[in-house]
Image 1 (cartoon, one colour):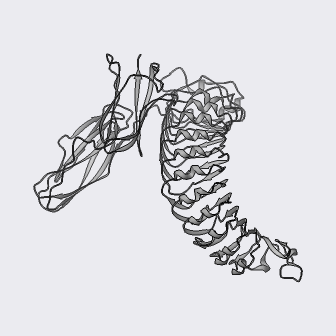
Image 2 (spheres, one colour):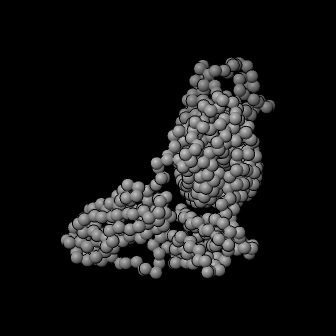
Image 3 (cartoon, helix red, strand yellow):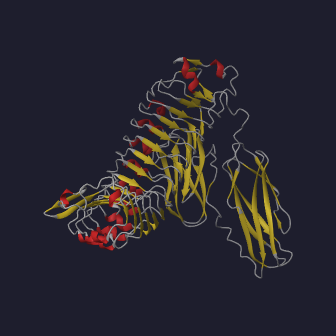
Length: 593
């Protein structure tokens, strides 16, 4: 293994006892430990390693070792610690580890191992640290490894793992570190995550394809310090119960699809130092409690839909270094600014400040802190007063195929357009030529509403037809293109049963003054697990409408205005959230009583 070039090869291959060779430990002339990390070793691990049947520790990490692990390594059954990280090892070690039942630490991170994660790892019942990160392991996480009840660290970061997070993860109740980040995992976070009550150091699920709402059971991890959920497809409201996680020091939830208000319970996170919630769809006012977190250092909430007033007095944030509120909908600011000396930057650009109030302008603000702090504020004069914050519209598909249609017959295909334009009465036009047509050439759609569009295809001759449907939103001057493909063959399409909806939908909720109940209407296109919950603007769940399997069809729930305990709720604004798999929709409820 290129011994002459080692950083330290003291006494190696000399006539001195092996116990005096650098990095070697012996007991009764038997080698029990080889510790040569960061020593410029290169080449392959020799097959003779398997002859050291009394070996308990092997640390060859941070070298230039390559090739596959020798099969003889499985004979080292007394091994307690195997550290081979940061080398160039490769292959699939499926048949190596199963016999090493005394292992407490197994770290083969930062190599080129591939294939499936070995199921035989479940035989290592004494294992406390399992680090397979930064390799090329593929396919599902085997449920068998969650039989390792002594695990304190499980790190599978940066592989090519797919599938969902197994619910059996709740069996590893001694975990302190769980890192599944930077894979291709899908599905939602299982509620069994709440059983990991000893998870204290970090929960890292970032950079995957996870979706759905964050389960409230995550709040049971009351001693957890760091959470990475960023760069996924999580949606819904941030759970009100997050305020119970009073040991949190960092919360990374950026680049997701969270909506609704930031729960006021974040004010309970007195240890929080970093909160990154940018690039979501958070709306409403920032809870005042957030501005009273004494240890907060960095706050990023840019690229959301937050409203209300930009705070002027930040003296309570004695540790704050950076605040970014860029590209939101803040429309007011205090005429007196007091900033802590720790602050390095405060970005409030691209909001709606100074747009309506002609008596207040950036130059008239009074700074009660040191004068130089004025230069720390970014974007005072870079506002969006002429931008009405229009956004485009969502379409359920961008390609529609017509098949099995006879000449001169008529076939229909349906799709949905969902409005998310901040202005009501968005006027959409759609048009195309040839063998395709729509009976109505325009439609009016409101924000958060959904309209159903049917394309009709009547082939003139048996042939392939290609066209593009152009949909234009004239209120925001945007267009959407849908590819249309018609293939004329010999049989006519079968139309779908109109008694079953085509798509999940939570209808806008209108309050009738003379009615004692509120009709909540929702559509379910197939038997599905559906959750519909009413939240207050603080993010607290008030009423559960349904939570379980719902049959396909059109449904109505008559809500009498009571909460889950049967007590009447107060008048005001509430949010009704419907979730089914990746689908999520929110409607507002305004109670006047």
